[in-house]
Length: 206
Image (cartoon, rainbow, N blue to C red):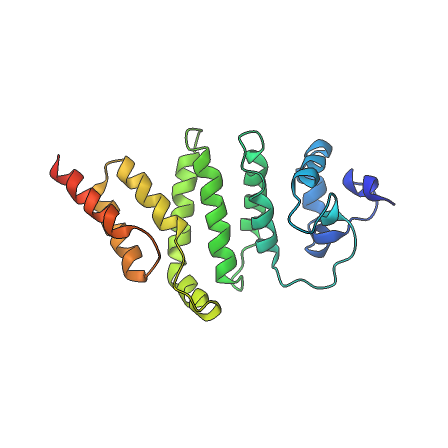
């Protein structure tokens, strides 16, 4: 069986889809046209069309959650963001107690970016807020993992940043200040002091 057969749900599927045991999801959750589109669009450096469904992978340092998070990030245009949502949902369904915290951290980062882009659509803003809170909930564990893996200081934190923006837009300045102080205390990179000062000024204008 060739690539054409694997693409349209016939014959043996290989690549990352097979390695991570995602064949049923790949065939069952996407149409033929969607699978073809995903294969065409997803081309990280070094990969070509169909690589995620062809060949045999014997070992990978990436978890299934990490793979799906990366895959979802390729579909954040207005016309294909629904695919990113489906991929994020699958990744989230595969979170377990032993999932690496940085994989969880980056999955929620992707989820925030995907859903916040559609914030004017039904439920998407609420889902983005939930994703911010989910990422914040694992922040302390993520700090330990970042410090163990990287010598430099902590990076920015999408959950803290995006939720601070949302709270400020909602004029919930006291909550925004408390959130920024928490991010600052934990050591995440960002303009937290400026945000705190701006919110204090806005409180004074009310």
